[in-house]
Image: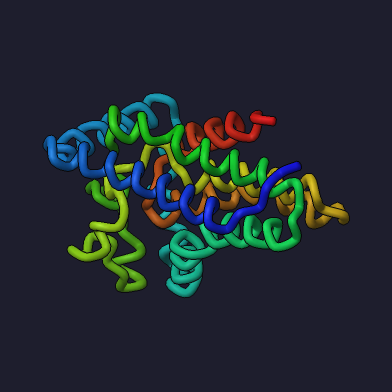
Length: 222
């Protein structure tokens, strides 16, 4: 029988976050920002060669509607992680057996990204010329603030954890959905998140593709 221990879950969450911050520290202390910019430029060039450089065009479209951009920024900053955490909390409170599989997949997706963050640090599009930092320029929220930047890894664009979590959570919700509209929306959720992270200048299309593959792999665990 599966155990439900709040202390264990909180401890696991803090451990995963500690690993994330340790990777951040290791990367940034060794000239990681410069490496991250070079890697970002490599991704941009690769997307151009593959015909996948949709991000600037998508940004031009959404920037015509600032209110829409505010909503996209909110979705990027709050909704994505909030949905995963909220669904986990709901399953935990119900002592639902599906909780353990979703929690395990979420942890595996997060930890699975860390070696890539360490070996291939990548600046997000918003840090490069030709892209717009919608969070800062439209919503006035500066992710590079000296306090905020200590709480996350600013050179962890590849792979996109937002998309990885969207795959993990969207699939989990779809499996439990009782109506076709909800099931369809859940399966389309990763595509929506991909559009949001690209439109807000936080991830490249290739980031999203690798993030989706990471999420799918994490879901394969029994």
